[in-house]
Image (cartoon, rainbow, N blue to C red; front, side, top):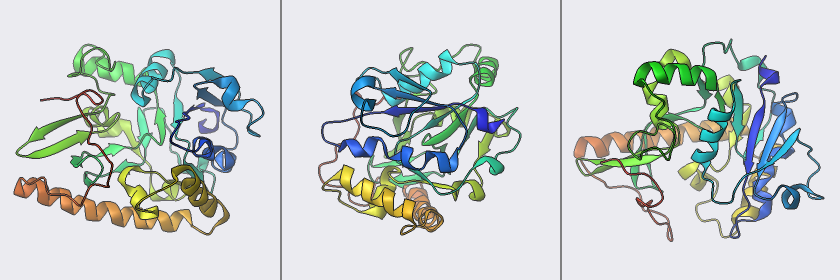
Length: 291
């Protein structure tokens, strides 16, 4: 039953981001997922939750401050045998999602499909993926299928930069940078029959506000990220920004960026829209590089 699948949420408070931005999802979570048990992972479970939140999860765990998103996902995959959801803190739900899930018995990954597109933040062609902002993962089936494909379990971000199916990486071909985001490589390795691309009826039930470079559709330069994101979140929550309308804009955005990516590949050109000021491209020290 999809309403029994536990939800894992990693709450991260950064010095340069308003703390409000790390807790937005809890305002609407029970609209989209009324019954699912919720497990919160916080860097300081006492400091983050005591006296600060009206939402009470079933469990609060502590996660180290230097644990990356993909390390955390790897830990969840290795520590669980039953399916689970992972959920970002800047997701807004406007309707219940339960009726839009099929029988998930043979599904390994479920999520919103993001097509290959030109990404202004990484200066790369972002390879297609299922987005981790609201993702379904069946770790038991995943282990079985990956073992059948590879004869081993090349999942750990720490095993080797060249074989992890979870950690992001980028590579160069004909002057073009290709970027595989978290779990993107795994998505491409799996049989499509084992992946559930959320249909429009499901994605219209929620919106991921800070969806990579799509954040510039909300506001190009965010002088106060936390406050601006909270404002956008509340506007989506109260109907001023309608999630289904935002979804239409987002789909159009990706289609435009998809065409740019196709031109980059065809012309062997790394020409992209301007990268926002102050942004530094990922380096080999922060994101694994495959050559």
